[in-house]
Image 1 (cartoon, rainbow over the protein chains, first blue to last red):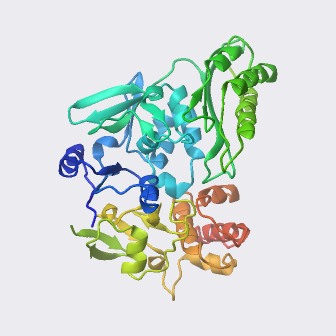
Image 2 (cartoon, rainbow over the protein chains, first blue to last red):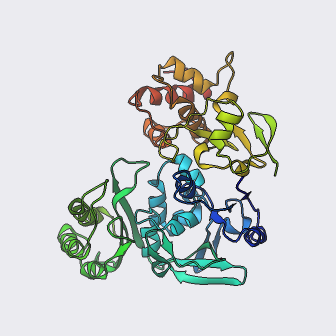
Amino acid sequence: MRPVFVPRDLDGVWEAWDQEPMASVYAGGTDLLVRLRAGLVDPPALICIERVKELKGVRDEGEAVFVGAGNTLAELLADKTVQTHFPVLAQALQVLAGHPIRHMGTIGGNVVNASPAGDTLPPLYVLDAEVEAWSRKGSQRIPISRFILGPGRVLLKAGELVGGLRIMKRSGAWLHHYEKVGLRKAQACAVASLAAILKTGADGLVEEARLAWGSVGPTVVVCREAEQTLKGRPLCTETLRDAMTVVQAAISPISDIRASASYRRHVAGALLLRLSLLKGR
Amino acid sequence: MMIHFILNGEETEIEAPDRRVVDLLREDMGLTGTKESCGMGECGACTILVDGVSRLSCLMLAAQLEGRSITTIEGLGSKEALHPVQEAFVEQGAVQCGFCIPGMVLASVNLLGENPAPTREEIRKGLAGNLCRCTGYQKIVDAVESAASHLQGKDTP
């Protein structure tokens, strides 16, 4: 019988890890238990961190917000602080899987799983989220774009787990937008997705733009050139078509069971056109 | 390691921490109302309620049940007195092969607990994690709509 630890606090996690140094850590189990059943992993023990109290909750720290890694996707979707300050993340959570999965899966798990199609990742990139890696010795903050190395690969050392995410609030009025195209609306991995936050001036011209795409590369793809294309211009179809050309030239998506590379490239660009419908100030 | 939880209202004790909850329910406890279809979180057939919230029993291990209260389809109503959602599924003819129905009913109970008067669109979104290959969903949505009216004390449409 494989031991399964369900610690209620961090000390319990470290103790379980001392007993079983080769144990796999999971929270919601929506990724690990699939791989376990398929025989892709066979850890000697499991540590389920879904009830670790230090990993729960969303804390407004003034200039920044701390989001505990152990929050389920449903808990974050219902959270007022997330809804108010990070609508782009809330929009992504709304189209992530379906209710039962959102009741189980956690934001920390979505980050550590580092799927190219992870729905929360493009929003976390445009929001410049920092990942807090916790170990017995302390914690360190790593920008998400450095933390995620490739599909399923992250910058976690032995004895570290993701404690949470720290996201700075943004001053001024920003437009938030997330859209994903999948083969059906729920329970489907993205064929391509776009997270965008934009700041426009009183004249309606774009002052700042942050764009990130999911499912069109091994990790989330950002495109500074496309962001620059929007700067100083009105958010109209003409501007967006220019940015579309830029991003389509910059990305090199793959073909897989869900979509061909050329369709992904088309959709990744076309998703930008929706930004013309956002209402500026 | 003994695990204690409440299963359909009864105190339960088991000793199989690494057992998948769906196997525990079906194979060990004989509660075959919970179905396993995909076994990987895609279909919702194995939905159960954990402290009233829908979760997938194929992606949970028994150790995670410690101290929780579990409801399976067997615990929702009785043969003599069906739960209003079950009643509505029967009345509206929302069932064809029936394999997805236990999960569909439990997901509906969870949905109506959070939103007692959902629109048809909200019902569709609320049940989007539960797949049905027979019905085309129309009559399932009809049933949930009807159950909502009934639970709110209105006449069924």
